[in-house]
Image (cartoon, rainbow, N blue to C red):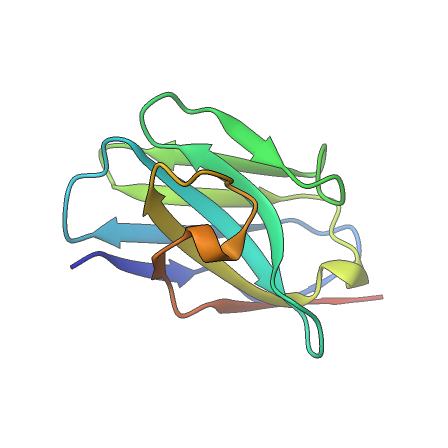
Length: 124
């Protein structure tokens, strides 16, 4: 049973940085992809970025490209989301997701496993 546990959320100000962590457990993750998504109140869940566990291939949404970085640590079985130059529009609950070779990494429905989410609030 795959488990994903996010941490690192909090309240920051515009321009600050924050790093989210997602610890993955329950199996080995060869051929898995991990995605970061976010959901603001009243909005749909939105793709933020993803990383392929084996090859390290990364994708980002246009809204975070150049500001956010996804990475992974094999030894710690952890995926990170480094967020720089945060703005109020980044305020949301951030979720880590995982699936075995999702067809389209940006679609939430492609992911079977989800973490519980961590709140990020950016004040102006």
